[in-house]
Length: 221
Image 1: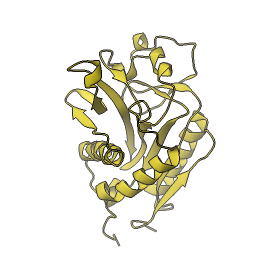
Image 2: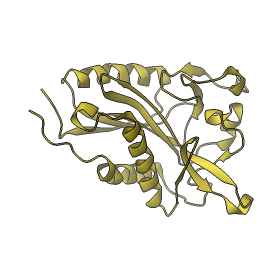
Image 3: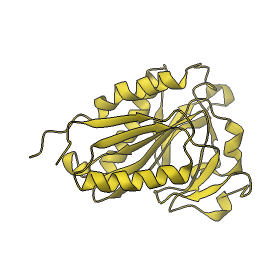
């Protein structure tokens, strides 16, 4: 059975251990590929931790004993997850959409940017720098900080992992790594930018903008 028109949205109120989330994503991705479950967008937070993508360099793990470190299996390098950061795990069947990995990553970027726009924050992309960035002119003419990260994995054309958006995390927690291998720039959050929004408001914006970027696919027999 296919579920091309029904996406399940799940919100976890309590922080989800990383290994639990990984196991759940693996199982759900397999079920989606087999046609046994609908697509899923899972909104959650994790306890403080670092994850290592497939391109992570050990020298970018500056404080290996600060938080637990997990091998994520996604693309990318080191990143931080923790309270105050909204993680969205996106499990879509690209066979029913557009089987194009580059286009999918670009759509995730557009989703973050559209969500930020709901809070009058201008997110931008930079060549050679993964993620979504905001200008910080108060720090200098060319100063920019990262506010959203992307890391994906695709198996049998089903996506998993996804995005993270900094709402109000402890920004000092990022100092234990070189985030995504980029040391020249900092990190920021919606609250750091003066947008005193709640996680529930961010969730509403993520859901409202999702279909703008990921329209419901045509029914496939």
